[in-house]
Every structure is written in structure tokens, then in C-alpha cells.
Image 1 (cartoon, helix red, strand yellow):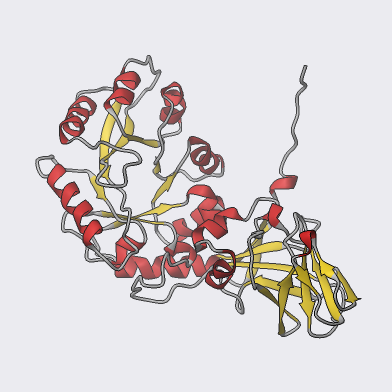
Image 2 (cartoon, rainbow, N blue to C red):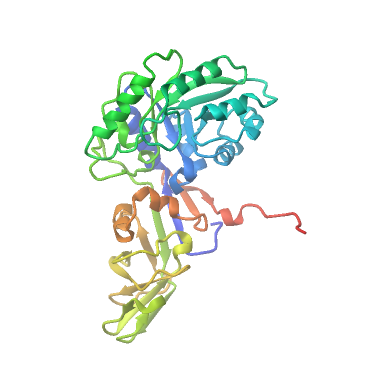
Length: 385
């Protein structure tokens, strides 16, 4: 194992494969899947997840930044990749060379891009984003959208490949805002020649709603990792979570009654208790806001006591265990959703928050196929001053 600590994240790639296979069977045949693997596939590892998705027949990916796209290219992912964010026009040569698709959000950016002297040998594929109610990125004026489409189609620099929007409330039970966004999008593209274009609006939660007939691509990121964005989202099949988090007990001691545990003394022992120390903390993304959480160790629940430290947590044991005993923090006995209830966040924020200080161990067909430890990959060179 190429890491030297007791804490690691395990990713079950069989679960990823199973989830996306179920999605392919559920979505209409005319809808291609665009796998959203931004933020390192929500903390699961973009490269390894992408390779598994390719095995399952997924051929389109999306990320947030150029760096994320280049990491995929560097690791042999050659299929189409869409950047959601705003791409600096200074990097258009890199985008073109690496065959990366980019999003167009404004006329100002488009005019600036078209004024650049790009050394591109072939057009850059672009998807134009329409702002239908998220009010984050995209064209809000219909006239500006059509002006952009015309400029792109008349340009030698760009090739129009898709049009999309993003849903703000698709996981909510009340569909009124969702339907308003769908209606706005449909009205905006009503006069667009859609021949050969990818038209996509749905994120994971939106993808299980009845799709408008003009949709031919669906974006999903959470579902492929076995995460459901909200309890009220009605799934056509069970998702299989792919992420588990494990560590070990590194120290066990008996602490007398009325002693304070960890920083600020927020927990006091009610009696003589056995306290175990586990090497994970908020620097790893194990959330400092935790209230009434627990871990699973030696076949029993052990509550987390005291404030979460940067590198360590303390747990109250019903009875002493041997040092080195494995600890499950997320896994078969503790779901990511349960963990999120203890810290007051949502599941996809939680998995993104697990830092690359924690090594990732990948399993496929029940066997370890790769260990990724960002702390040991390469070295920093050069001089300063």
C-alpha cells in the first residue's frame, strides 16, 4: 500500500459501474449521458471514476475548470470533455490543442475570444448556456443568446455543439420553479436550428423527472457515485454508494469521571470511561461541526466526543479495544447521509470536503486495482528569490 497512515477512503468502482449501467437502462435511448466528474468526481477521484464509466459505455464528461480537464487528458481520457466555467481566452490554444469543449456565457466574452489570434488548427467545440433562473452563469436575454449563436456559427474559431441550462430546484418536491425553468428554456430555443446539437438541462435530480421531448443528453454526477441529492427524490432503482471511510484506533486509555475531552472542554466524562483516539480530523474534511456522531468499531457504535481536532478525534468506547482495531466512519453501518445529519450539511458537500490528504483505495471486481496518494505523487522543484 503506497501510503503511511491508518486513514483511507475506499472507492468501490463496481458500485460506480452498476449505478451508471442502471442509469443507461432507465434513460430514454435518445438521451446520452454526460458524466459530471468535477471536483475530482465529488471527492471520489475523477480519473478512476472516468475510466470505469468508459468501461460502461459513457463517452461524454464535464468538469468545472481547465485544470480538471487537463488532468483527465493527462491520464488518457480522450473522449469529449465540457468545461462548465468561464474559460480565460488566453488559454484557447490549450483548449483547442487538447480538444476540450467550453461553455459560452456572455457576448462580452465571445467578442473578446473572437478578437484573439488563436493558433487553432480546427474549431473549438462550444456549448452555449442559457440562464433560466439559477442566475449564476449564462445568457438571460433571448436576443443576446441568438446573437451569440449567430456569431459562433459564422466563426472559424468555434463550432456550436450544444445548448444547456442548469436547474436550481430539481430535488425539491414543489415543481413550480423547475417547470418555470423548463418553460423558459423551451421558449428560448424554440426558433433555434437544433440539428446535430446536444440539448441538456437535467442534473441528477432532474434526470428522473419526465424529460421534455427535445432533450437528448442528461448530466449526472451524484447518481454515478451512488449519492441521492435529497430524500424526496424518487429513484427508479436503488443507488449503491461507492465511498467508504476507514481508520484505526491508535490509542486507548481510561479517563476518570468529570474530565474534559478535547479543545474548549465541550464534553465532560460522566464517569470513568474508555477513550479511543482515531487519526482523522478536520484537515481531512471530517467536519468540525459534528454533533452527536459516532463510528463503528469492533461490532459496536462508539460516539465521537469532544471537539474534532485537526488531525485526530476521540471516541467513547463501551469497553476497551486493542490498539490497531479498524474503525468505520462511513460505510456499511454508517451512511453518508447519517454523517451529514451530524454535521449539518448535504452529502455531496461532505464528499467534496474530504481532502486529498486522505489516500484513495480503488476496488474493482472485489480487488484493489489502484491506490492514489496525492501527497506522494511527484515533487515540487525550482527555486525562489
